[in-house]
Length: 174
Image 1 (cartoon, rainbow, N blue to C red):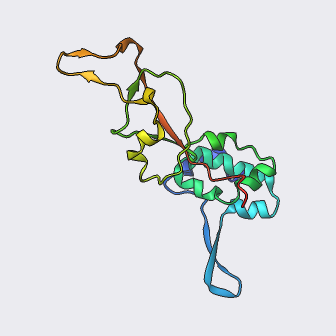
Image 2 (tube, helix red, strand yellow):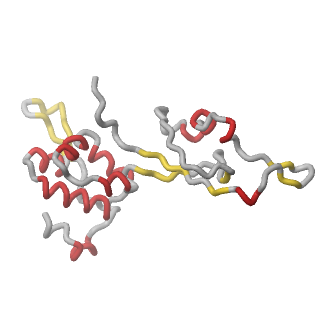
Image 3 (tube, one colour):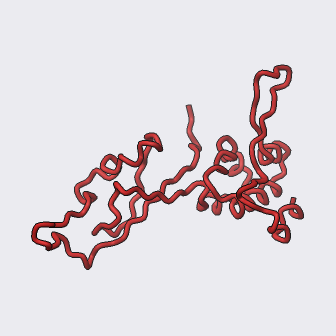
């Protein structure tokens, strides 16, 4: 695996044509039902911890987009239990996506970082700023257009960046 995924072959690697993906496999004895398995799942099943680590490194470097998160929906806890490093995976664009909506404020006087839960649909997120940041201090800045004077001190206005963490639910018990 180390030889195949070595950077010497990087001219052949492309996010447009991923190497790692889920294969649709018919269930034994029932050709009408299927399950999905990736090379990561097969390697975990055979306890090939080093190979899984190399695959994750490759995915973070060359398949660094949200679509690759589907490779980890059911196996992320097993990967962590086996001690395979996942910090770069969790910081990558696979699980952390920058969002930019015109409906959300782009500047504010609040400088601190905030982490907020959101369990709604990703498709409704665009319109849910006031539900997520409901406190008065997060209200969008207002300018007085009539007097051409600003109601706020612009020397203390900061640019806002919004990110959504797309980690699969891990550690949940039913």
